[in-house]
Length: 159
Ligand code: CUA
Image 1: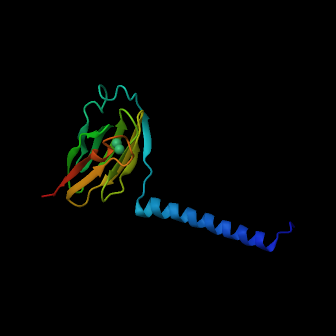
Image 2: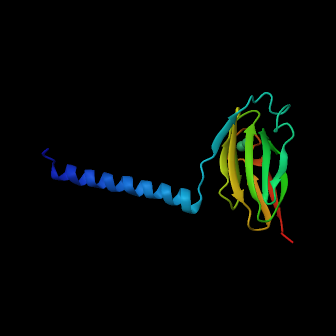
């Protein structure tokens, strides 16, 4: 039996409790609140994304009723496209890449938030249950006109 100092034992117990709390936090935020980590789904050549592949002709595509995907290209200082329409209730998967420097993509009122990196495609999915306008913007400082880099998602009401 190893002799443990009283204080050392208390700190060991405290550390164990903290690990349990962290594990619970990750479980609750990931599986109940719906916080997602953006997945890096693909590598691309940033010098070619504007001229070939799905990012050369970006936009919304319907996959099935209520299912859409969006390819979006970021560059200093704009998103292409910077306005999209989807019907209310749609599940929309976003694929973003950058053709120059690091950008961010944050959609107001949703859990869509990711870094947009040159050479990498980032993916996140959200379901738009409420109709209306959702602003999105770049939230990684990317140079002189970073603050104008924005756009909007318009969720059209279901009839
Ligand atoms: Cu792009 Cu800040």
